[in-house]
Amino acid sequence: MRILITGATGLIGSSLTQRLLGLSHQITVLSRNVQRAREQFGEQASYWSTLQDQPSLDGFDAVINLAGEPIADKRWSKAQKERLCHSRWDLTEQLAKLINAGSAPPSVLISGSAIGYYGDQGQAVVTEDEAPHDEFTHQLCQRWESLALQAQSDATRVCLLRTGVVLAPKGGALAKMLPPFRFGLGGPIGNGRQYLPWIHLEDMVDGIVYLLEHQTLQGPFNMVAPYPVHNEQFAAQLANVLDRPAFLRVPAFAMRLLMGEAAVLVLGGQRAVPRRLEEAGFSFRFLELEQALDDVINQRAETR
Image 1 (tube, rainbow, N blue to C red):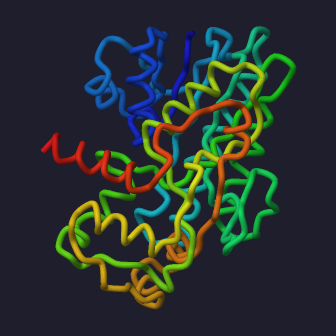
Image 2 (image 1 turned 180 degrees about the vertical axis):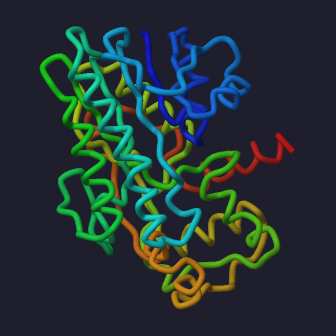
Protein backbone atom coordinates (compact mmCIF):
# COMPACT_ATOMS: atom_id res chain seq x y z
CA MET A 1 0.00 0.00 0.00
CA ARG A 2 1.00 3.60 -0.54
CA ILE A 3 0.64 5.25 2.87
CA LEU A 4 1.03 8.87 4.03
CA ILE A 5 1.99 9.18 7.72
CA THR A 6 1.99 12.29 9.92
CA GLY A 7 3.65 12.22 13.36
CA ALA A 8 6.04 9.52 12.08
CA THR A 9 8.90 10.58 14.36
CA GLY A 10 6.76 10.44 17.53
CA LEU A 11 6.47 7.62 20.08
CA ILE A 12 3.87 5.58 18.17
CA GLY A 13 4.66 6.86 14.70
CA SER A 14 8.33 5.83 14.69
CA SER A 15 7.58 2.19 15.62
CA LEU A 16 4.59 2.07 13.25
CA THR A 17 6.60 3.47 10.33
CA GLN A 18 9.40 0.93 10.89
CA ARG A 19 6.80 -1.86 11.00
CA LEU A 20 5.08 -0.72 7.79
CA LEU A 21 8.42 -0.37 5.97
CA GLY A 22 9.23 -3.91 7.12
CA LEU A 23 5.93 -5.06 5.58
CA SER A 24 7.08 -3.53 2.23
CA HIS A 25 4.52 -0.71 2.15
CA GLN A 26 5.49 2.47 0.29
CA ILE A 27 5.67 5.17 2.96
CA THR A 28 5.60 8.95 2.59
CA VAL A 29 6.42 10.80 5.82
CA LEU A 30 4.99 14.28 6.32
CA SER A 31 7.31 16.12 8.70
CA ARG A 32 8.29 19.72 9.39
CA ASN A 33 11.79 18.37 10.07
CA VAL A 34 12.55 16.22 7.04
CA GLN A 35 16.23 15.86 8.00
CA ARG A 36 15.34 14.34 11.38
CA ALA A 37 12.82 11.99 9.77
CA ARG A 38 15.34 10.95 7.09
CA GLU A 39 17.93 10.19 9.79
CA GLN A 40 15.36 7.87 11.38
CA PHE A 41 14.02 6.04 8.31
CA GLY A 42 16.70 6.53 5.65
CA GLU A 43 16.01 6.24 1.94
CA GLN A 44 13.33 3.56 2.34
CA ALA A 45 10.67 6.26 2.77
CA SER A 46 9.73 9.39 0.82
CA TYR A 47 9.44 12.75 2.57
CA TRP A 48 7.17 15.79 2.36
CA SER A 49 7.65 18.93 4.43
CA THR A 50 4.24 20.43 3.61
CA LEU A 51 0.84 19.69 2.07
CA GLN A 52 0.54 23.18 0.58
CA ASP A 53 1.31 22.19 -3.01
CA GLN A 54 -0.86 19.04 -3.02
CA PRO A 55 -4.20 19.27 -4.89
CA SER A 56 -5.45 15.98 -3.36
CA LEU A 57 -4.21 12.72 -1.81
CA ASP A 58 -5.30 10.52 -4.73
CA GLY A 59 -1.90 8.81 -4.96
CA PHE A 60 -2.35 7.12 -1.56
CA ASP A 61 -4.22 4.03 -0.41
CA ALA A 62 -4.18 5.10 3.26
CA VAL A 63 -3.45 8.09 5.49
CA ILE A 64 -2.35 7.65 9.12
CA ASN A 65 -2.53 10.89 11.10
CA LEU A 66 -0.65 10.83 14.43
CA ALA A 67 0.76 14.38 14.63
CA GLY A 68 0.21 16.57 17.70
CA GLU A 69 2.04 18.47 20.44
CA PRO A 70 2.66 16.19 23.51
CA ILE A 71 -0.20 16.83 25.94
CA ALA A 72 1.53 16.37 29.32
CA ASP A 73 4.87 18.08 28.68
CA LYS A 74 3.90 21.59 29.83
CA ARG A 75 1.36 23.33 32.06
CA TRP A 76 -1.88 24.19 30.26
CA SER A 77 -1.60 27.94 29.89
CA LYS A 78 -4.07 29.52 27.46
CA ALA A 79 -1.30 29.62 24.82
CA GLN A 80 -0.35 25.98 25.44
CA LYS A 81 -3.98 24.87 25.11
CA GLU A 82 -4.09 26.67 21.77
CA ARG A 83 -0.93 24.83 20.66
CA LEU A 84 -2.30 21.47 21.81
CA CYS A 85 -5.49 22.04 19.86
CA HIS A 86 -4.17 23.56 16.67
CA SER A 87 -1.24 21.12 16.33
CA ARG A 88 -3.99 18.47 15.95
CA TRP A 89 -6.97 20.28 14.45
CA ASP A 90 -5.34 22.25 11.65
CA LEU A 91 -3.50 19.34 10.02
CA THR A 92 -6.47 16.99 10.42
CA GLU A 93 -8.75 19.53 8.73
CA GLN A 94 -6.22 19.94 5.91
CA LEU A 95 -5.98 16.16 5.38
CA ALA A 96 -9.77 15.77 5.30
CA LYS A 97 -10.08 18.58 2.72
CA LEU A 98 -7.42 16.99 0.48
CA ILE A 99 -9.07 13.56 0.76
CA ASN A 100 -12.41 15.11 -0.22
CA ALA A 101 -10.82 17.05 -3.11
CA GLY A 102 -9.75 13.90 -4.95
CA SER A 103 -11.54 11.66 -7.43
CA ALA A 104 -9.81 8.45 -6.22
CA PRO A 105 -9.18 9.17 -2.51
CA PRO A 106 -7.41 6.92 0.01
CA SER A 107 -9.61 4.06 1.17
CA VAL A 108 -8.90 4.76 4.86
CA LEU A 109 -7.93 7.60 7.20
CA ILE A 110 -6.68 6.36 10.58
CA SER A 111 -6.57 9.42 12.82
CA GLY A 112 -5.33 10.02 16.35
CA SER A 113 -7.47 10.78 19.37
CA ALA A 114 -7.09 9.93 23.05
CA ILE A 115 -8.88 8.21 25.88
CA GLY A 116 -9.18 11.74 27.31
CA TYR A 117 -12.11 12.06 24.90
CA TYR A 118 -14.30 10.69 27.73
CA GLY A 119 -13.03 13.06 30.42
CA ASP A 120 -12.70 11.77 33.99
CA GLN A 121 -15.03 8.76 34.29
CA GLY A 122 -14.36 7.63 37.86
CA GLN A 123 -14.97 3.90 38.36
CA ALA A 124 -17.39 3.32 35.43
CA VAL A 125 -16.39 0.84 32.71
CA VAL A 126 -15.83 2.92 29.57
CA THR A 127 -16.63 1.44 26.15
CA GLU A 128 -16.70 3.46 22.93
CA ASP A 129 -20.39 4.27 23.59
CA GLU A 130 -19.79 6.00 26.94
CA ALA A 131 -21.09 9.57 27.20
CA PRO A 132 -18.14 11.95 27.75
CA HIS A 133 -17.68 14.48 30.54
CA ASP A 134 -17.25 17.96 29.10
CA GLU A 135 -13.74 19.10 30.06
CA PHE A 136 -10.68 20.30 28.12
CA THR A 137 -9.43 16.88 26.98
CA HIS A 138 -12.91 16.03 25.68
CA GLN A 139 -13.23 19.34 23.82
CA LEU A 140 -9.79 18.83 22.24
CA CYS A 141 -10.51 15.23 21.17
CA GLN A 142 -14.11 15.79 20.11
CA ARG A 143 -13.14 18.50 17.60
CA TRP A 144 -10.11 16.45 16.47
CA GLU A 145 -12.38 13.48 15.74
CA SER A 146 -15.11 15.53 14.06
CA LEU A 147 -12.55 17.06 11.68
CA ALA A 148 -11.25 13.58 10.78
CA LEU A 149 -14.81 12.34 10.20
CA GLN A 150 -15.25 15.01 7.51
CA ALA A 151 -13.12 12.71 5.31
CA GLN A 152 -15.63 9.86 5.60
CA SER A 153 -17.45 8.82 2.43
CA ASP A 154 -18.44 5.69 0.50
CA ALA A 155 -14.83 5.66 -0.77
CA THR A 156 -13.02 6.43 2.53
CA ARG A 157 -13.55 4.90 5.95
CA VAL A 158 -12.31 6.71 9.06
CA CYS A 159 -10.90 4.97 12.16
CA LEU A 160 -10.32 7.01 15.35
CA LEU A 161 -7.60 5.94 17.80
CA ARG A 162 -8.72 6.75 21.36
CA THR A 163 -5.31 6.01 22.81
CA GLY A 164 -4.43 5.30 26.45
CA VAL A 165 -1.04 5.56 28.17
CA VAL A 166 1.44 3.91 25.79
CA LEU A 167 4.14 1.86 27.53
CA ALA A 168 7.32 1.91 25.47
CA PRO A 169 11.00 1.02 25.94
CA LYS A 170 11.99 4.61 25.07
CA GLY A 171 10.11 7.83 25.75
CA GLY A 172 6.45 8.27 26.61
CA ALA A 173 4.88 8.42 30.06
CA LEU A 174 7.10 5.68 31.48
CA ALA A 175 10.25 7.72 30.82
CA LYS A 176 8.91 10.38 33.22
CA MET A 177 7.78 7.85 35.85
CA LEU A 178 10.90 5.71 36.03
CA PRO A 179 13.50 8.02 37.67
CA PRO A 180 11.69 8.48 41.02
CA PHE A 181 10.73 4.79 41.12
CA ARG A 182 14.32 3.69 40.44
CA PHE A 183 15.40 5.72 43.50
CA GLY A 184 12.66 4.17 45.63
CA LEU A 185 10.77 7.48 45.67
CA GLY A 186 7.76 6.37 43.61
CA GLY A 187 4.23 5.70 44.73
CA PRO A 188 0.55 6.29 44.00
CA ILE A 189 -0.72 9.72 42.95
CA GLY A 190 -3.59 11.33 44.86
CA ASN A 191 -5.92 8.73 46.36
CA GLY A 192 -4.60 6.12 43.89
CA ARG A 193 -8.12 4.92 42.98
CA GLN A 194 -8.24 6.62 39.57
CA TYR A 195 -7.96 4.20 36.66
CA LEU A 196 -5.00 4.19 34.31
CA PRO A 197 -5.85 2.79 30.87
CA TRP A 198 -2.58 1.51 29.37
CA ILE A 199 -1.38 -0.26 26.22
CA HIS A 200 1.97 -1.78 25.23
CA LEU A 201 3.55 -0.05 22.22
CA GLU A 202 3.67 -3.33 20.27
CA ASP A 203 -0.09 -3.85 20.73
CA MET A 204 -0.69 -0.23 19.72
CA VAL A 205 1.26 -0.72 16.48
CA ASP A 206 -0.36 -4.13 15.84
CA GLY A 207 -3.79 -2.58 16.44
CA ILE A 208 -3.21 0.18 13.87
CA VAL A 209 -1.98 -2.37 11.31
CA TYR A 210 -5.11 -4.44 12.06
CA LEU A 211 -7.37 -1.44 11.38
CA LEU A 212 -5.42 -0.74 8.20
CA GLU A 213 -5.84 -4.29 6.88
CA HIS A 214 -9.48 -4.95 7.89
CA GLN A 215 -11.53 -2.96 5.43
CA THR A 216 -14.88 -3.17 7.22
CA LEU A 217 -13.67 -1.42 10.39
CA GLN A 218 -14.44 2.24 11.04
CA GLY A 219 -15.37 4.66 13.82
CA PRO A 220 -13.82 5.05 17.30
CA PHE A 221 -11.61 2.39 18.91
CA ASN A 222 -10.34 2.43 22.50
CA MET A 223 -6.64 1.66 21.99
CA VAL A 224 -6.08 0.26 25.48
CA ALA A 225 -5.30 -3.15 26.96
CA PRO A 226 -8.32 -5.14 28.21
CA TYR A 227 -7.47 -4.79 31.91
CA PRO A 228 -7.02 -1.18 33.10
CA VAL A 229 -5.64 -0.79 36.63
CA HIS A 230 -5.93 1.69 39.47
CA ASN A 231 -3.06 4.16 39.77
CA GLU A 232 -1.99 2.50 43.05
CA GLN A 233 -1.86 -0.92 41.33
CA PHE A 234 0.24 0.58 38.56
CA ALA A 235 2.67 2.06 41.11
CA ALA A 236 2.90 -1.24 43.02
CA GLN A 237 3.53 -3.31 39.88
CA LEU A 238 6.10 -0.88 38.49
CA ALA A 239 7.95 -0.94 41.83
CA ASN A 240 7.76 -4.73 41.85
CA VAL A 241 9.29 -5.02 38.36
CA LEU A 242 12.07 -2.62 39.40
CA ASP A 243 12.44 -4.38 42.79
CA ARG A 244 12.01 -1.07 44.64
CA PRO A 245 9.61 0.14 47.33
CA ALA A 246 6.67 2.39 46.37
CA PHE A 247 5.50 3.92 49.64
CA LEU A 248 5.66 7.62 48.84
CA ARG A 249 2.19 8.79 47.93
CA VAL A 250 2.17 12.03 45.92
CA PRO A 251 -0.66 14.24 47.28
CA ALA A 252 -3.19 15.62 44.81
CA PHE A 253 -2.41 19.23 45.83
CA ALA A 254 1.28 18.68 44.97
CA MET A 255 0.38 17.47 41.47
CA ARG A 256 -1.89 20.50 41.01
CA LEU A 257 0.95 22.82 42.09
CA LEU A 258 3.31 21.07 39.68
CA MET A 259 1.05 20.62 36.66
CA GLY A 260 -1.76 23.14 37.13
CA GLU A 261 -4.94 22.19 35.25
CA ALA A 262 -3.03 19.43 33.41
CA ALA A 263 -2.97 17.49 36.72
CA VAL A 264 -6.37 16.11 35.66
CA LEU A 265 -4.37 13.77 33.38
CA VAL A 266 -3.00 11.90 36.41
CA LEU A 267 -5.61 12.65 39.10
CA GLY A 268 -8.54 11.62 36.89
CA GLY A 269 -8.86 8.52 34.78
CA GLN A 270 -10.91 6.17 32.65
CA ARG A 271 -11.63 2.49 33.21
CA ALA A 272 -11.55 2.12 29.43
CA VAL A 273 -11.80 -1.25 27.68
CA PRO A 274 -11.14 -2.10 24.00
CA ARG A 275 -14.60 -3.50 23.27
CA ARG A 276 -14.76 -2.70 19.54
CA LEU A 277 -11.20 -3.86 18.84
CA GLU A 278 -11.80 -7.20 20.59
CA GLU A 279 -15.18 -7.65 18.88
CA ALA A 280 -13.37 -7.13 15.57
CA GLY A 281 -11.15 -10.13 16.40
CA PHE A 282 -7.95 -8.38 17.47
CA SER A 283 -5.75 -10.34 19.92
CA PHE A 284 -3.58 -8.49 22.42
CA ARG A 285 -0.08 -9.76 23.06
CA PHE A 286 0.20 -7.97 26.43
CA LEU A 287 -2.91 -8.47 28.56
CA GLU A 288 -1.44 -8.06 32.04
CA LEU A 289 0.28 -4.88 33.20
CA GLU A 290 3.16 -6.64 34.98
CA GLN A 291 4.00 -8.61 31.82
CA ALA A 292 3.97 -5.37 29.76
CA LEU A 293 6.11 -3.44 32.28
CA ASP A 294 8.57 -6.31 32.56
CA ASP A 295 8.95 -6.38 28.77
CA VAL A 296 9.49 -2.64 28.22
CA ILE A 297 11.79 -2.19 31.23
CA ASN A 298 13.94 -5.15 30.20
CA GLN A 299 14.12 -3.71 26.67
CA ARG A 300 15.30 -0.42 28.19
CA ALA A 301 18.01 -2.26 30.09
CA GLU A 302 19.16 -4.03 26.92
CA THR A 303 19.45 -0.79 24.93
CA ARG A 304 21.56 1.01 27.52
